Length: 120
Image (cartoon, rainbow, N blue to C red; front, side, top):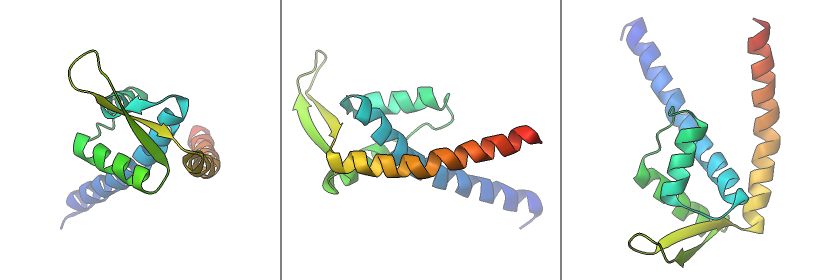
């Protein structure tokens, strides 16, 4: 494998890993503001990342089900003005604790990295 291929592979892996952790963090953040349904979460992630992280719908549903199964979220079906009922997710006290712990780790690290890059 030449240097360009190796770099491309590493960047793709980095993006994959970043998306996985970011989706969980940002999903908890968005739902902590107000209950939301999956499509709304997907659209908000696109807005927050300015289109950089286009979340696959199936992966998002899988993540929401996992967070609910683990007790971080709960869901409720609500009528929709357009079509079928929607499943709205809200954060549980356990989910708030997870979000706060993630926040305490991620924000200082990201802030420090940002400051280091600004110095260069």
